[in-house]
Image 1 (cartoon, rainbow, N blue to C red):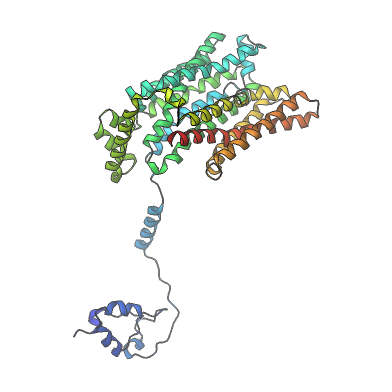
Image 2 (tube, rainbow, N blue to C red):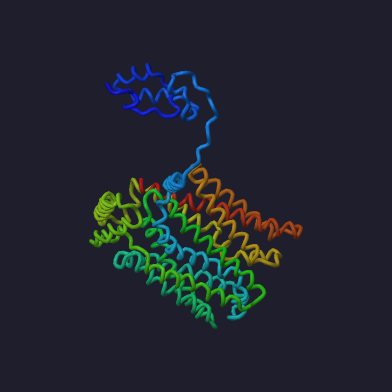
Length: 456
């Protein structure tokens, strides 16, 4: 019968008598039993107690130095624990989100220098023309948004994004070189056309190229890009109060992100869903393997094709179905929230906060608008946390009530003869609270409420 030493060579710190080793060698699981009898702390190597069976002298454990291979393995293990599954898709998402940066930039680009533009182009004091110069941008966005679906279905997301940069670049340059109201209106309208297409296209593109696990997190880049664009334009608008011609440089700068988008989308991937829809399944598999995972290719293709099949079944549906049960109540609530959201006054805060601050006596209205933009960005970040912690209905009710109170504060400050410093502080406070509640709760909760209930 083989000895215990032959079956499992004793470790330097293993204390087993000869009799115990012989008995354990008869057991079919001798090695497991011997490991269970290992003593801790270890004994000194070469101790005579291991050979004689006497009680060994316990010594303090010697420090074990870590070899370079062990250090490399530890580093590799820590890297493997990092969740970097979002990283392959992030460059494509980041490039597409440049359109949201442009959207935010054009929202705030007229906020500060609108008076300088009015004086140079000859409509100073005409509030209707001032409002038209700003709102024509939204009119163009409306037309662009309703015409975007045909372009996306025919050309795909990537090529549509590239073509869409043409009105963005031309509109920005034409606005910057404007010497009349008509040229300014035409330039702003062209920019609105491009922004309208992008507001529909970019969320679709981001959701379709992002892995399912990270779709929500990567989707927030569009909102963050809009907030950063507003902050950038408001920061640049501070200089417009000292330089009456600075607004032209601001509008020229608006073409830079459009050029980045134009060349950046050359290296971006196409939407896997659109590739499957037009029959390019092999290309869709390559895209999924490069930005998602090789193990998800077949399962993802099956899911995409199932969605396309379900969409084809709904081609016979009409808008009339929204006004009958079971969609009638959801459509009414969602539509009412949308209308009330637009009439809440948020557009006036975004586009004319500098003029509002000037009306209450604040000399540097552009700086006050910058605080509003920073609050906008902070609210977008906070919304990611609060929206899933509280119910949508409670947050929507509280946000509308808070917005009404904040707008009431602004009106009272403008029309009431109170201390000048106090009126300045209250007007800025009311504007910031209104912006925070809108971006933080109202806007996100409305879109989430509408999405969840229309999907139900």
